[in-house]
Length: 305
Image 1 (tube, rainbow, N blue to C red):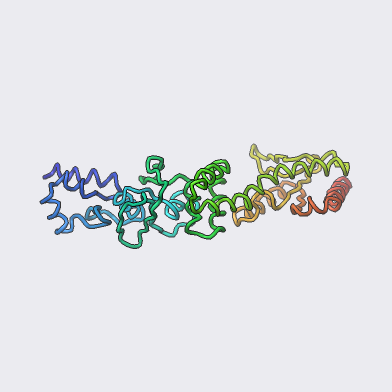
Image 2: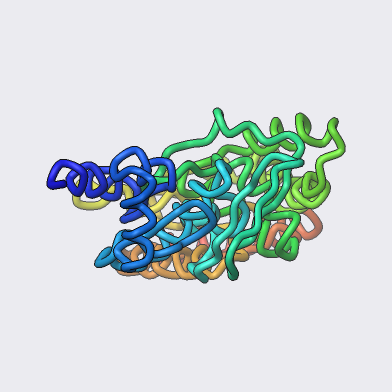
């Protein structure tokens, strides 16, 4: 009996306090398994899955119960929360193969997916989870485009997913008529590829600005260091005068995190004696004369000081 209890405990420890019906029968036998259920030493969590009495109920346990019950993969909003792509809301969602019967206890949700590849799932926090790129595609099915865009930005900033990853999975699944890829395509094209292109185009515009308006001292993508640390990488600078030039609109400046980061970085630059000029992408593209004039005026002012 002690060995049987130890076998149940060992299985549960590896599965967030859960055991499957098959594991319970293998350890206890069918008669004792039924008795443990009657005595509530094993408590139903999802069809074919039990929680060991005394094991604390957690969100990860709820997710694991769905995974064990369906043989599926944690996905959609639940996977996004695990990867840190969405703020935690406690969703319990999994993707299962099309044609697989699953009657889950609420609030768990099962998505039947034709092209599901459980063997390609990623292990994370003791769960089988869709990888970040696939997770973002799946989000297009269940959340507004704005949240998909936010998740993709977070994924890129956390280095969990690259634009190339997102484009690849969008193209691969899109050829199969996969829902959600359309929204991801719009997000990439509108929110991220525009930024990606703009960075290289900004450099071209700055080079043209420097040549046309005789701003030879203007250095692009200049790193400001202090106390052995890179304080900021500014879009343009006149280093000898500690004049920094920042362009809003080409590097994800629209998110709250980016807005806060930009302001904190500017404060650090000012504290180090730098003067910061801020322009918008529209200023550089449509009003280069004004941008050049303000940069030149700042240079003259700083030289006179």
